[in-house]
Length: 264
Image (cartoon, rainbow, N blue to C red; front, side, top):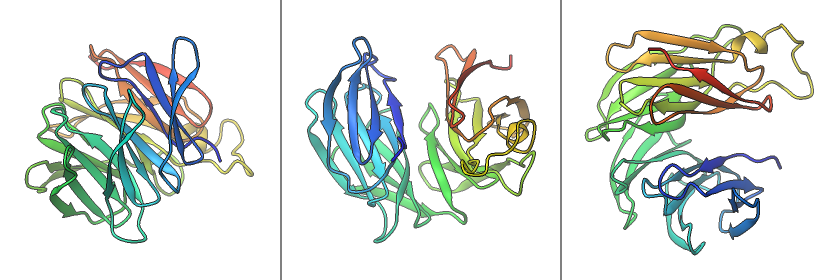
């Protein structure tokens, strides 16, 4: 089974990163390339991982319906959440900037906010369409949810919708948005098309997927499109913005990682 998720240190532990192999999360030292610990517990594919703001805790969301918290220093499982209804998948997760709360979304169509220490469900709300990822704004006041053809924004305290940013595909019938991120200043939102090319029937170079795998940037308040980046030729699985907000990094199923200049 190919790797499904990857997490790199965003907090203080930038010397290590984690990947999923089968259903086991493995943590690697980036300086010497050695696997320093294995985090076993999930019984099905891990879709997403997120690091706490201090870099000490890793959370993982799985098709087994659970979200698990792990200590990166000891490898010990700290907490297990039954994050979705029975027979549903846990898809997307993200920590709030304070590290005290975690947002999750699953195939049962519900966004849930949990206390990151106790695992208590604090609040929840349902959305109309399938969501593939969630991202918390830097100020912790908004939750962005990516779905087919759009990014929907909610008030993090009430779950009230604040509008949607439409993502119309350049080719094909729809755009499945897997990759989602806020800029560090919280003023812009990025999303990227995660529709995968069939490896058994690849699209010819210069056709369909080469023109449809794009990254979009919007003004988070007005919804105005700010930029569009095209270059990847298969699903874009993750995006991130540098701390100074000047550089965008994207990772794709086409095997490439690309760097882009953010709009001024």
